[in-house]
Amino acid sequence: MDSSPSATQPKTVSPKPPDAMDSELSKLGNNLVTKFHVLMRISQIYDSKNVALNQFVQEFLGTINTLIKGEGVLSLKIRRDDFFLNDQRLRYSVEGFTSFKYLLTQWKKRLIGEVIFKTLLEEEWLRYFIYTFINLEEGREENADLLVRQLTAHNITSIEANPLEVVEGEEEAFTVQKEDEREVAKKIFFETIGTIKEVITNIKGKQHADVRKLKRLAQKAIHLVIEDESILMGMTMIKNYDEYTFNHSVNVSIYSLAIGKRLGFSKKTLTELGITALLHDIGKSKIPREVLNKPAALNDEEWEMMKKHPLMGVEVVLNLKQLGEINPRMVVGIFDHHLTPDLSGYPKLFRKKEVSLFGRIIQISDAYDAMTTPRIYKKIPYTPEQALAIMLREKTVHFDALLLKIFIGLVGVYPIGSLVLLNTHEIGIVYKTKPESTWLDRPIILLVDRDEEGYPKKELVDLTETDGGGNYKRSIVKTLDPYKYHIDIAKYFL
Image (cartoon, rainbow, N blue to C red; front, top):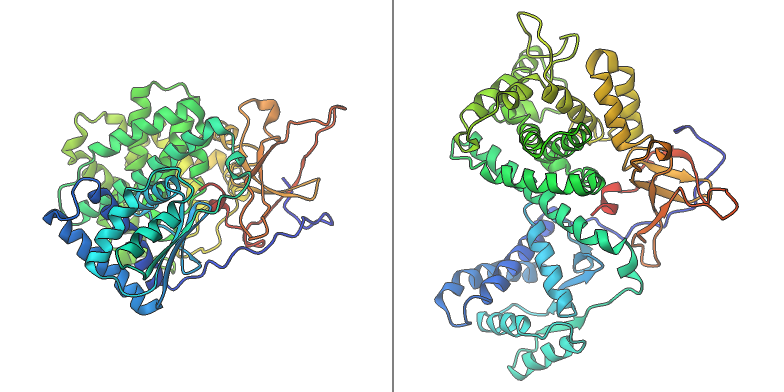
């Protein structure tokens, strides 16, 4: 696990395709995808003359014509699993994940890879285009030409379409039987972030917060964790700087559920643990935004306010009637998650008490995710390996030593998401750990390599593979800092 400089140098990694995009253009592009998604769905319910369609048509027109005015010609194109707006990749938001996924699926089914809008759209053109598009036969190779011909026959010559470019061998990039589970995991992950955001926003605005959906999502996550904990663990590598509060809550819940599974918790107890972890920081909804997002160190008054968030979280949860009957260990878990075995944490207690099991589990999950995530006051986080090293040093003071040992068994000697150099001079990302203790230092590695266009080749290798003569084909030499190599780890888990 040495991360010091070495004479062994990795292969050169090709630069990524340019991702920089003006924030306003990015916002409009995301909005366009969302409007496109809604309009396609609505069009499958109502016919083109239905009044119910009017509002959605006008909203789409407003968004796309604003973009066309600013850009001149507008191209929306699929490359691999991304949408590009005039050759600039659109990064989807938490809320936009469902729309991106739907649109990608529908376009790919019809083998449409690009649509180009050359002039401002008129309402009649848009209606005809949408209905012609959704009526294309799935899997038909000539769909792009057919779409253009039908538009031209309707005197619409300012919209063009190009077929989907299929990259040879792309389908075999991952183990086929796990592909569906990974897609389900992504859906649950992003949906849970969106739901926790909605709950916290409503609590801040003193509005009704429906937490029942969180319970359903926690139960779905438990099913995945029981099937294969590494699938959801991989999702925790997706770090959304702008949505830290919500992203962090979901990551903490995933880590906590994985620990709970290793402890043999029942599904009922796992559900309670998952929800407790999701809501562990809900007390921060009562703290002013300027304190939460302060880039500098907090002053004494601000720090005292921050230290009250576990207690405020208890008050909030006790008032969430939709949770139904609340098990006391859920409330105590939220209260305890910053207490330490030596009681040096917070809130300050008048007399000594044992930190609850839920509290000790969430404390480990909370610390690890916080240390490995960019923050407003620490733009470059600790690597997974560095975070574990710090936690091990502090295990007798801040963490339950036995639970920390279980956690390390989960994330591995080389934690999921670690960037590593192999003895073959290849760079890889630790993608999945082995449950067997004998293979903790031989995880599944996702090689960091790029094709001619600069896109990641998602090739998985198993470090337990031998060459037939008893020697391992590949071994880890050392860990690397992804920030020094400008590698976006999250991109490889999406």
